[in-house]
Length: 305
Image (cartoon, rainbow, N blue to C red; front, side, top):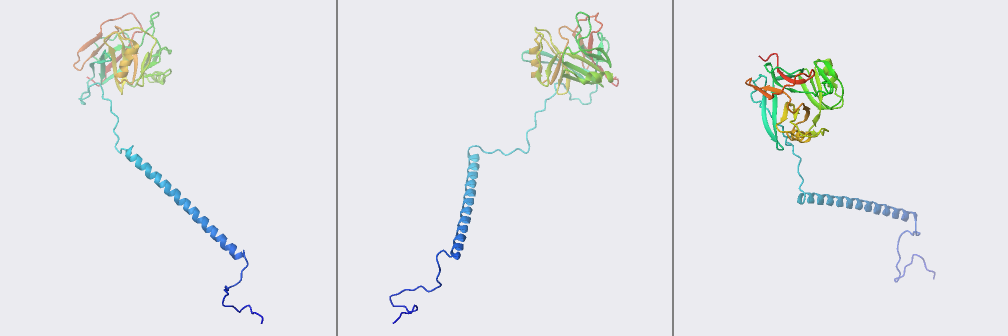
């Protein structure tokens, strides 16, 4: 008897379903899908690991910063820079009288005389100022004069009139509209401005430039004198003992002077008047006979009776 394919013996096992051939197109699609899913899961795992690792590093950095180097929070109210107090006495704001304040100080074992004019107008003058002129509250020699011909060394302007030209020294003083400026430069526009506005200008050795000492060639020691700008406060500083240019300039730097130029030192003539109109001679040595002997003078204003 022939056997039918649908007949099943007791000892047989048959799988019921559609018969497939190996490597069918549907199997290939399923495998590709699983590969894409696996790849996506792998990429997600890598990204998660990177974030976790970087997060741990940040946590470690923050922990180390706290333990070993505590972070300092920025100060919303930083401490203001120390304001340089003036040397002179300005406590009486009602005082308009012109006078010179005389102070004494010692810097680097160098005794100094400090002369600070108050409420006075600076200018330049030729010839020795009259000690009986009560309008003058401070005067001292300004520019050098040549030993051979008695003429002024370097550029010099007297009330708008140039009397001398040349750049023999880099320090300068310009007085324009009653305002005095001290500085160091090869060329200063204040020379031309002084000629245009009936101002004053002269040259001298530079001593301090923006708080920095300036070296000079002349050696030896002598009584030294300087015209100084200390945070806007104008003063004349003189050594009581013979000093070198270097040591004197260093004392000015340590006095917190911003800019300073030399004035004729040694036993050059000068005087001042204090707030009580008392006359005091700085050096009582007159040197008449020099046509171009010049002085810087601080005078009372026309409104000061």
